Image 1 (cartoon, rainbow, N blue to C red):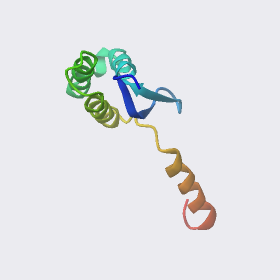
Image 2: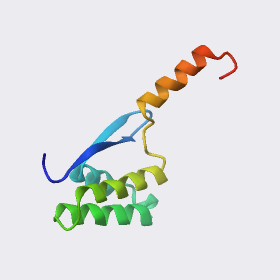
Image 3: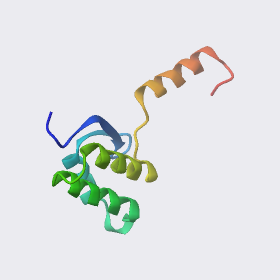
Image 4: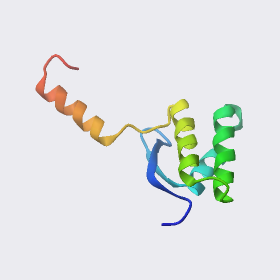
Length: 99
């Protein structure tokens, strides 16, 4: 495995229901670099700096992954887990009171 690869990808939404799997520090760096200037804040700044440091070998890729995931969560970009979606559909099928 390459040193910038994440142990587990971060699933984010990049459009109307379109998922993307961010699998490496470089992927995260690209997404952060493309983040609109008008929406930039401390979360993306910290995550971007962490990605740069990870690419230079100064910190672990998993540290950058954690900061990227925190950025994605803050901006409601994290894609819902497929298992959670499937489970919610199963509950609705079994319980007529759940909508």
